[in-house]
Image 1 (tube, rainbow, N blue to C red):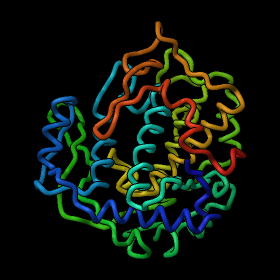
Image 2: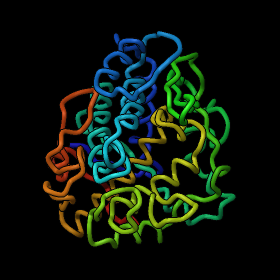
Image 3: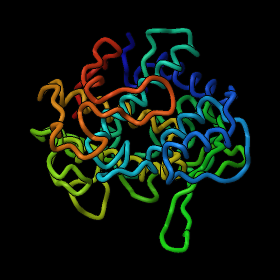
Length: 326
């Protein structure tokens, strides 16, 4: 069983994470882009992909899985976002990545690290993208191409973009040349979430509330996902994606490993909420939108399928070094 720890305070966890990301990205899988596209289209008719047919790395499989989840549209949100399933699905997603990294590293006790972005959100805006995290010893540059450190060796092969199909804007995954990771920290939005934002989500008494959409203004899930409170600026999880920018923007956002540092912290906040409020999930079966029930089989492309009910208690799989989230 692994312990997930703060990447800034655990050099061993940091180095293992960077090494595993690089290893999964440089090892080509037997799956080609066209094979992945064909398999996904059978399950997700809305999914679109174009470009070069090429072998995908093992890391790319997580990128395309996440992108496909966003096109698997349901009556509420999609199979991984904008509804109650958001937190369980990403926990399932990261559990599998963590297990693959354990195999790569030969360490069954390895745990993903997290980035406590709310602590950095307490800093002045001009300092938030100049922290130790964005250095050669950690994850590399905050803006532009990532050249330094281990992640400077990673390349993106699948990139999400939007296009006009004649009637509406649609998303497509482009398979193309191997490029460096791109970031634009602090330009699209100036500041990260802060600890008061986390406290607001933590204080919600219910996991989610009807009608269980991105528009609800209460509930732990929707505040933590970042759709609420309503306004022009995204909050919490969503705000981190927008703040980092670059490859963190489209559905292929796992291209930047900071994706997993963000979501590991999101998962930590959810775990802290459950530790305080109880391992409760809502909606109940009779009122759940399609794909968001406690016993719904979560969308997966890799590994065994899981249900939200199977990931509410992960104490036998990993723990966090701290649940002090604000």
